[in-house]
Image (cartoon, rainbow over all chains, first blue to last red; front, side):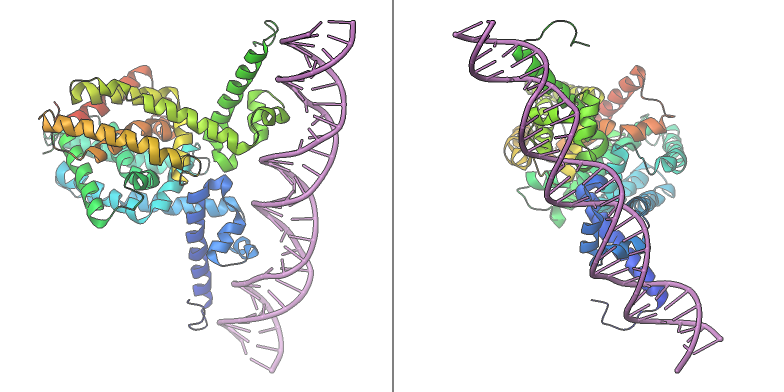
Length: 210
Length: 210
DNA sequence: TCTTTTTCTGACCGTATGGTCAGGTTCAAG
DNA sequence: CTTGAACCTGACCATACGGTCAGAAAAAGA
């Protein structure tokens, strides 16, 4: 562990413990949901006394909010690759790659996000109405431009975005189901490659971009 | 209410109260998750005293299990239309229609199912390993047959099924997000029609069936 | 009508949870 | 070395939760 290495600076202590708690919280919230998660369990996973959590995060809801916000950030940046693309094959292909990679690397975060939205977004409703709405109209406009330029079929841009979100996030949110249907084993590197290729080829063909 | 209509038979009382409780439970479990739901709230929604719930369902988990099982039934039958189809256009088209209709009519059930799977399927793991696995291999075989007969492109059948599940269930599980992006209003009849058509056309084109 | 079975419910109980707090410890600045 | 601020935590508290139970009420049967 890092504790025995050397005395830590003040800033380091704060930052290190916060991320430690946030990681534990993300895991526990993903596994049990907000209502099912307990501060005690998060503390145990983080290896800290419960009272220490409340030193860094006033309430369970504060901690949860921070977890959700962290995920939202990762989620938004996944589309950066889409913007500089010349057309849908590159742009949407790269977006699918990025989102599939997030599903693979941050399945817990994806689950927390899904749970939050499913329960009516009690904590991040304002983000949905501002940031996400702007984000969506922006990308829908980009897709519409590609359609106008004849680079893909005239699909509904919003519903295409929904399909991209649904399909890629499914591999995180329903990862347990996929694992069970895969004989109880997690997807191997090759299987992830196949999943990405399947999604990409079906969607890109589906929007008439190949 | 039905209570004042006439004295109810014993069987009717039991059956009526059970469905009343199950409906209330589905709603509350969908909105709050298993951990966040309380027997008291379910009782309030059902309009019954809490102790009465425990008369019909011994524990919270028993009640939850019944809710999940009910959804699973609906879910499985949605593919009946797929079996007698001559090819992917009819078969998968009908399956998408059926699953979209479920997302529209039973959004709460879909959310409970999603939550259950996301949390590692603690209650219906055995169903996943038996019924769902058989179901999946069966339909994957059907799709493979269509591929062999040259009726559609050579896509991976499992990943196609995942895409079908993900895309259609997204309209229930993430309905709140979609509603927010729709200006805060639920989808109208026309918008549901457009959603179905979008999903159908993109996927059917994506698998080379049109 | 009398008896038995099922349905119903207010009051209660043990426990677990989120959160508090007083007091201790560690670190850094002067 | 002293002082003050930041960090840490065991013990505690009020509340809310799932679940129980004795007994009332209602229905079915004799």
